[in-house]
Amino acid sequence: MQYIMSFVWSFLLVTMVTYVVSSILNVPFSLTTSLVLSVVFLILIVIISAIIPNEPTPDAEHH
Image (tube, rainbow, N blue to C red; front, side):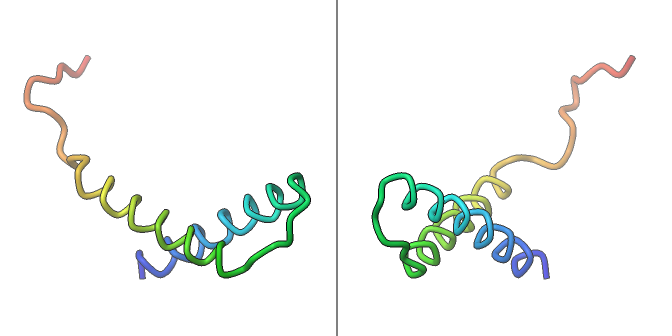
């Protein structure tokens, strides 16, 4: 479910950015470009979330 919702949000956000940029550049909007970019964005998010540790560092001081 986590990956499905991540894809939905990445698709919505990337589609919005693609629409705005294509409108500014005066080029036709392409939904396939948005789909491909959203999949790439999702893969990058999954990789970054796998790299970042969930546990706090052992030497972290809590005041």
